[in-house]
Image 1: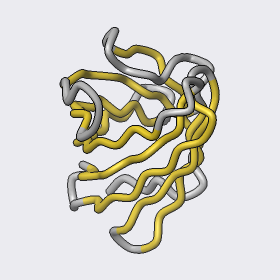
Image 2: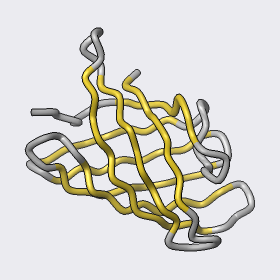
Image 3: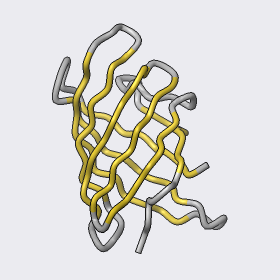
Length: 112
């Protein structure tokens, strides 16, 4: 089972309509099957996510953030974990804005 408690991640890839970048750092916490994270950097002043993790380590989450344009953005995301040869976690994320243009995208974040 994947455990996200006290893990730090950064963005390694994102579609053009996303706001995270390699400057965005995520600080994850986990209690039981509940996952939360605070994040900031790049175009994001401050963000927060909350989600539930299943037995396969997949996270169903909701997020909200304030960007450099001072806009509050919200969305939902499903993250699928991959264990790298180094023992670090890579998350493949399929997300959708629930505010603004309501577009969909994909991103990848990796454990620092």
